[in-house]
Length: 241
Image (cartoon, rainbow, N blue to C red; front, side, top):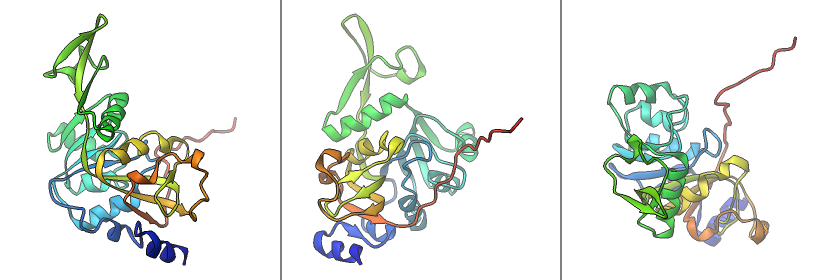
């Protein structure tokens, strides 16, 4: 009931992930996706993209999820033409496609990836960083020296769509993240033309203290909530002696 009332009040809240992505998807698009491992992964929106059969997508995301969860679904179905990411993770199909040259992969140091997204949101077209100098990451890129240190030029990431996962949202789209879900999601949300956020809980306006807002609602155009699963990427158990 609350969700229906808020939808009528603000127009930001949608009844399903499919509706929240309506009119935003097209073949060949670039999507920035939140997630730190499986934490803060916008699984409902990823599933909706999968169901929409969008093709040749470039994804900018920290990693590729698991074989059958998150971005792994899209990779397995050959919907992803390029990944801009920090590492492959535990996705064996992603690794197989990469080694077989069936998918283009641009590996980016994790801090540089975060800064490229932040720069895209801040309107900064490129920046210099010492990270990656002397490695394959820096090959073919302009170099310059600052205060005696060689740096490489990295371009900002500006996407057509960003999809993020938050813990709480209010009707205006102000978001609150939980723990490591905050690592990439706020930066991802800022670097695209349109941001769609899936959340675990929608609270009334004023329920989130302004000092506790992690991402202002001005960055968020659409919101959706739903039932989430929380898989464990790598389960480690302690054996009793």
